[in-house]
Length: 294
Image 1 (cartoon, rainbow, N blue to C red):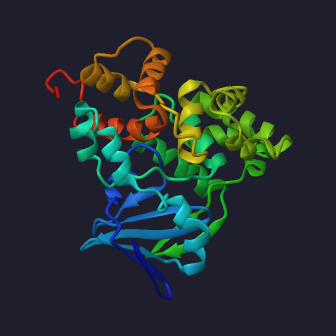
Image 2: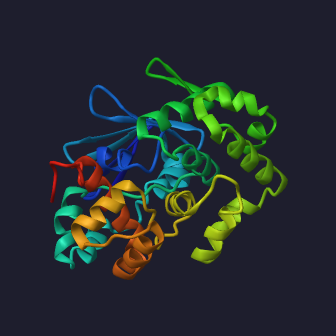
């Protein structure tokens, strides 16, 4: 990987595992939008950037060297060799087509608070609806960041901002019954300000149990938050797409905890990476539908 710094962008060559569509459309993040030219513009860590892949050169625009080194290198997990991960997972021949299809996918290192609320919102919602809600909350209660290419962008509101709101204010953002869960989480974190950001230092199960102290956070939400913001890569969130592909590929069924346990036995320390390849493959190929099989 070679990195070239310019005044308003960073160029990266010889990075063989980064395809923006696979990164931003694998169900892990909700503030990235595809542009007409195929690039993606997104909001993270109170910044707005555009990411494009052009002739095998990754172009990160509207940024600089300082932000790249402080934020984006870690956010995009650029220090990890994903080709090695794919090779390890593909030792099981059943995973070969899955990791080949998802080549270029990377797990983002998101902010814990925004990730937590995003996945509380995600319960029984599709990805497009989650995006709309997260953007609505940001536009109403977040701080203005900048106008980029003719569009205004706002940060995701801090926990103390959400804690200061009325529950009805949150409900107006189309969150339904989750309004009280979002408000309750904000109040708890506002009263225990070191708690959420210390969980990444705990053991996997301990961190999950801590998160599940919050109303509205069960196994799936806690596992998503740990995987997508805390680098707990043993985490294996289970939803309907994972249920379907685990049944189709590995003949594994049962309740979500049983699927998770068997998957973690299968993939070990690479469970989280396997989950993302499996989820993306299943969703994009509609695995489990009446007319679609592997």
